[in-house]
Amino acid sequence: MIVSQNLTKRYGEKTVVDDLSFTVRPGVVTGFLGPNGAGKSTTMRMLVGLDRPTRGEITIGGRRYQDLSDPVRHLGVMLDARSANPGRTALDHLLVVGETHGIGRPRAHEVLEMVGIGAVADKRAGGFSLGMSQRLGIATALIGDPATLVLDEPVNGLDPTGCSGSGTFSCDSP
Image 1: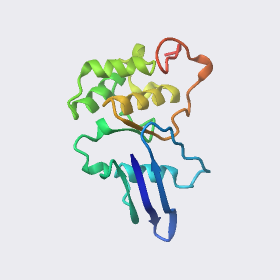
Image 2 (image 1 turned 135 degrees about the horizontal axis):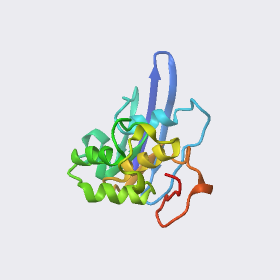
Image 3 (image 1 turned 30 degrees about the vertical axis):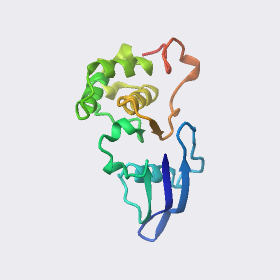
């Protein structure tokens, strides 16, 4: 369960998240909706410890993300689809992430297939379209087989008309 209690974030005089409290229960799909600049991404960044709250707290199962013993297995996160090193292949990116968490090559291949980019596993991420980068970001979030996913703009750049096949996010055009 994700719990935010009185979460506030200020940058100087500007308040971007103001006294936000909510609970996300297991098994429930929850979305943040709002205009650009409403604090959605900042809230997710505070969830994973990339930004520190000015006040309040946000926890996963009663613990801060940075205090989880193996966070990638609790919470799969994609905050920026273009976060992979552009010089690495899709497979190498996942292997690096997996290596830091004791996750091997078979799972990396599995999630690449799951999101529909197994055919481009050996292509460099820097040459990926936004949609392919998005799929790699989702694969990265899935690598630890987490109980919960946090995805910032997960369908941005995905082309549903070009997608088909057996994978969850399969797409014909590599």
